[in-house]
Length: 239
Image 1 (cartoon, rainbow, N blue to C red):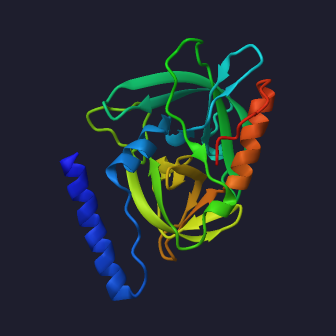
Image 2 (image 1 turned 180 degrees about the vertical axis):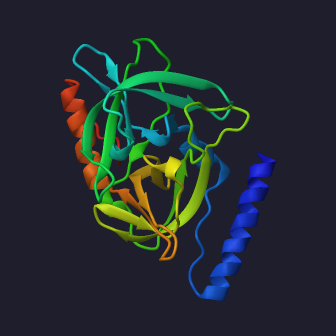
Image 3 (image 1 turned 90 degrees about the vertical axis):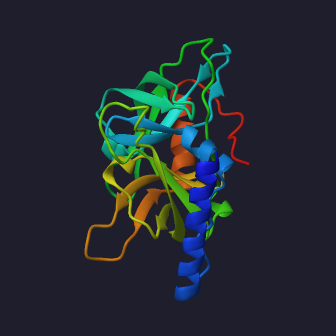
């Protein structure tokens, strides 16, 4: 939209000015179509966020849908996952936690399989980025629902985005921006691909940063969830 374009241009000009003053390359802002793409794949899960992973089909032709979030967001049982589209249409799904790795530490990942009815309209999903596709100083975008709460309000969506820069990347991805607690479990985007899942952020008084469980652990957990569902991943759908 025209308003979105104006906002992005203003933020881009500010980042370029800051870069000139401080002596580093500006953070690249997403264009409106890329932003709409990543926001529509970011979901609301209770007090946390998440991202829709590529679906996989079993031998009977049934599709299995998965969502990645953070292990410290786990409740140990069934979950409600809400998807909010740019048109303000909301879809709500129940799901169950199938993979949990860590929880609040350096590795912090949760995979939820959705109870997806056969014949339902497909969901927008994220392809996964490989570790080799990103490097320090690359621009990234973080999306999530920092306002928290159990419901999405379509008139006050709560879904936000923030541009950042990668500080380091191994199995943990560290960026140069802080995030809010409700962003936990939300994705970090490298272009249109999900690179990691939000885990921790800096407290006051020190360097500003946030850490994300990285692509190696995310790929492994995604395969494990598919295997538990009786699905062999034929296409990883990340490149």
